[in-house]
Length: 235
Ligand SMILES: O=c1ccn([C@@H]2O[C@H](COP(=O)(O)O)[C@@H](O)[C@H]2O)c(=O)[nH]1
Image (cartoon, rainbow, N blue to C red; front, side, top):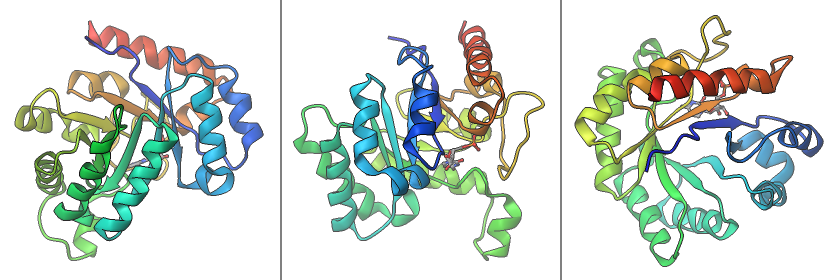
């Protein structure tokens, strides 16, 4: 079945009242929600629980990166919280990703488990500066192949890499793509940006959108416009 609910709003706020003021205007049929490091550090699992109780699918974007035993425990805790999606860093390695996948086997309805490949704020010059060899897109593909082999459901990547990843890894392997910018929107700190329409056309499954919605004077209108762009690209 085709999932038409493709937008995941990044709730990068610092307090519960701002979050609820936004979420009260939203419906679970028109978007999913993402809780990242900033909001989770301020408001913790209690707020995640409130969002789930309101009927939203929640992507807990804490990008776990630690020894396999610790990551397995953190992923298990996320599953107990009832989130829809959780992630780890692929650069944590194959054993770590495999331990995370194993930890979810005990659950009847586990969250989707995905791996961050190369952050969308990273440019080729950043890898060069870190003395990390190779092209970004090759590293993304390599990490994605490892994630698939370790039993994960998909990866976080830029939609710039989506077409190649879909072709190499197949339609079922999920691509979750931040760095989404409607035409004319400010890129901010993102380097590998793509419009909603192009992201869908190239095979992104879920589009993570933060500031273009949360910092807009009319957030709901921007969400509607993005959903319209997504729907026409899906047709
Ligand atoms: O590679 C990555 C992984 C995660 N993110 C997160 O997505 C949102 C994007 O927010 P914008 O305001 O639309 O830039 C943010 O929460 C990041 O932590 C990412 O951007 N890139």
